[in-house]
Amino acid sequence: MKIFHCNVRVRYAETDRMGYVYYGNYATYFEVARVEALRELGVTYKSLEDQGVLLPVRHFSIEYKRPAHYDDLLNIQTSIQLQSPTSLLFHYSTYRLDEMLNTAQTTLVFVDAASGRPMRCPDDIRFLMEAVNH
Amino acid sequence: MKIFHCNVRVRYAETDRMGYVYYGNYATYFEVARVEALRELGVTYKSLEDQGVLLPVRHFSIEYKRPAHYDDLLNIQTSIQLQSPTSLLFHYSTYRLDEMLNTAQTTLVFVDAASGRPMRCPDDIRFLMEAVNH
Amino acid sequence: MKIFHCNVRVRYAETDRMGYVYYGNYATYFEVARVEALRELGVTYKSLEDQGVLLPVRHFSIEYKRPAHYDDLLNIQTSIQLQSPTSLLFHYSTYRLDEMLNTAQTTLVFVDAASGRPMRCPDDIRFLMEAVNH
Amino acid sequence: MKIFHCNVRVRYAETDRMGYVYYGNYATYFEVARVEALRELGVTYKSLEDQGVLLPVRHFSIEYKRPAHYDDLLNIQTSIQLQSPTSLLFHYSTYRLDEMLNTAQTTLVFVDAASGRPMRCPDDIRFLMEAVNH
Image 1 (cartoon, rainbow over the protein chains, first blue to last red):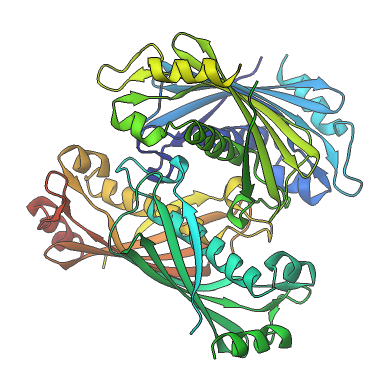
Image 2: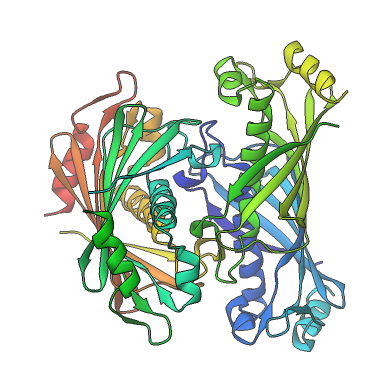
């Protein structure tokens, strides 16, 4: 399984009064990680939307092991696979150097913007998913 | 000048590692305050947008005097006036009990969603602004 | 099981370019919902922290069924139970009128601020949890 | 006057239902820009705080000219100067390619974390400010 790497620097705005990254902000980090992984594959999420394909999140879960702090440089490792004909499964692991801070998953569903209904993964993306994980 | 009152409870997500409300989050509090002020006047911002009238912010400035903390119940006092035929000026003062924490202003411009160009303040809103400040 | 109700109005800041509440923002709504549920039981999260008891989130998962939109008035229904001697389990369901938008769970762990180590749920909170769910 | 450059990619989380970057999110971009400018000078904001020097924002103002959109790569140009013996003035201009989107200023005040009172700018930072702008 191909692993994509993405670095994110923790912003002051993202910390809370415990001095930790607020637990809800990882969702944004994973958005950045998956968008950059797709970009590395030649797919820009923005152009998908411009073509009328939305990719809303259907499921998100995260297991927090250790907190991240202000100014930490985080490395998010992401893998992607086709979960069903209409959905993608992303796995994420967040590291600070070689310390794992958390692991997470999201399921994203292909939705036709015009009809608002689920649609099959476009062929070019399906081929990419198959190619990248061999 | 009519003063509108709006209460906002500080969320954990909105604090930073100093234990203060992050300085950028007041923009959101003022959005809530002006939307509730307009609602009190019978104007819902959402229905304005649904009618093709956008109200983007042109200018924002804020003077921070004292920080707000987690779980504080803030009272935001808002006044509205027509600044020009195409823009509204909002003044805000944020209080915790009788302690003033900051003061701010925003200018919002009426924009026609279809053309993307500034437009005159709709008559009904102009009449409301004139009526409310007498 | 006692169900706590909490209303949250969707802010403009919380929407994204799909016109939906950004998927990561529900974490903040659930923070508000659990803090208000505890307050209803007589426990303020702030005073817990002031007494040296932290409650970081260990696990969070959410299943999105339908999106929320700008200005929606959401009703979040929350239940709380002791999951282990050192952790609380919260279940959330988000409604817009009688339409269920999503369901979620968080596990929060009692941590001693001084040592940074997990600690047993304080007795008064344990009694409350037992009392409230009878 | 030395100009520091910082690139920020617009995240989906930062857009709103108009499809623009939410007006309050620029405060976070400017935080990133000034922290990276200081880092380029050899000053990490985190280590300042660890030494007991806080730098809260006293004043913030921004003039919005054009909106930024999802996935835009923004270039923020920042200059720093000593405004008074106890405060720094930052100017920011946000560009997308050669199009200027907005200009802003923040005043930050040196505060002694122990006493909570304003303090003089530490000598090493004062020397840096003088050196960098010659």
